[in-house]
Every structure is written in C-alpha cells, then in structure tokens.
Length: 246
Image (cartoon, rainbow, N blue to C red; front, side, top):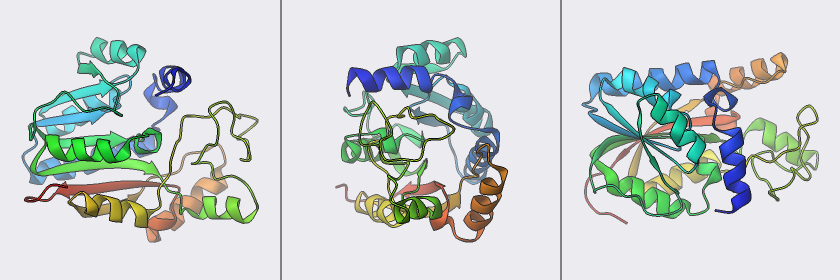
C-alpha cells in the first residue's frame, strides 16, 4: 500500500459516519443479530474497523468478543479509546491470527480497497472456524447507476484510475478526491469469487443509498429491494464450507 493510500484512509475513514450512514448501520446490525440469534458467535473479527464504532455495535448484537484491525494508526488509537481490542495491520499481508479462531468476520466497505484480494479471502477462510460467517459490504459495479455512467461515457465511481483525482467520473458536488478504490465487483463476480474460495452464499441484500439527492435515493432503494443486483451497494452474507481449502 502506498503512502498516499494510507493518508487517504487515515483522514477519510477515521470517522465511522464519513463512511457508514445510519440506515446502512441498521441493516448491518439487523443482519448480525439474525445470525447470532440462530448461531453461536463468541468471537468476531471486524477488518478495517476504523474508529471502532461499528465493531462495538456488532459486539452488542452478538454479546460476544469483537477484535478490530486497521492500517491507520489514528483509527487504531480511536478504537482503543472505545475499549476495543484493535491491531495495527495491513490487509494486503497475512493476518497474525491462529487458524479457525473466529466465528464471524465482518468486512465492511473494504474489498474495493484491497490490492491482494485473493490473499485476503484466503486468510479470512483460514481464520474462520468451520461453518463460520462472513458479512461484507461493497459497491456494486453492476448497479443501475454505474451502467448509466458508462452509457454516458463516464468512468464508474467505483473504479478510480488515479490516487490523485477521480478522472473521467462525475464529480459529486465538486468533490474530486479519490477514496482509494482499486477494484469494484459485480454481484456475479462476487458469487463466483466466494464460491471459488469455498464459501456458501446465504443472503444478498441491497444497502440503502443515502446521498444528498433524495430522488436518487428513492429510485436506487426501490430498485434494490426488488433487484439487489442493480443496487448501488451490496451486503453479502456467506458461510465457510467445511472440507477442502483452496
């Protein structure tokens, strides 16, 4: 990871509500509660845990232990002030955890930032117990919005060509600062990727859109309820298969 990317993560993602808005947080905690209500979840790893706010919410839902990890020193300090056990770690490298040591992993808005996504998925599978759960959220390259941008000749918002500007993309209210996206996946790609690494897909949900443009929010959220594959962002629940590892 470059110094520029670390600077972006430290400044833009040190505050939970710069990334995860309330309707999305409600969806995440509801999903965690559903899983923990039917399954034993004693210990969870929240990767890219930021300031630790969401991790503590997950902890309240599972009533178990939650461990956080993040590449940002500022985020780790904030999370520790929330009494969250947090480790400074680069997710493009192997994790310092024992195999089969977690019941659940939450990966919220992080897949799009990872250069070594295959390594990350291998490590998630390694540290999850047999039958353990993975909950992830990520932008959807196949969303109706991204398809329209491409049709009009604009760069998709989820794929940035530079660390210094959102070149070719529609600027959001004049904002042209990249947020460190190195990849964005379609729902089809996510399904095939997770299956390759021996995860069973359990649920696909559309994350609620929350922009300053109310009409856009209504359209995307309405379409997402019917067709999650067209929503702006996806929430995926999957479960580690028992048996052969990749």
